[in-house]
Length: 95
Image 1: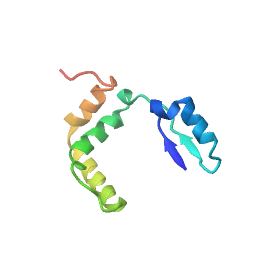
Image 2: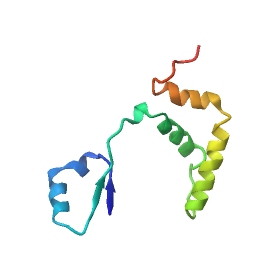
Image 3: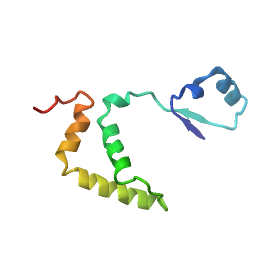
Image 4: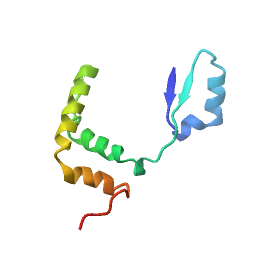
């Protein structure tokens, strides 16, 4: 199974022909979405720059623990969370 986003090279006619010749391969195309309007993308960006920055995780449990710890810290940082909402237009810039 192959899971793809909407990267332009994944959508070319040549790539589609290549994939149709391989009946053993299942391709799942992820739906398009606008990251600019999704406040979760801002939160992931913060976690990538803090909790997960410059780390190699040994397994999924270690990654899960790090993300939980980072989210726990973020819940007390209302200014950061508000900034993620302001970036989407879902909340006005604070005075």
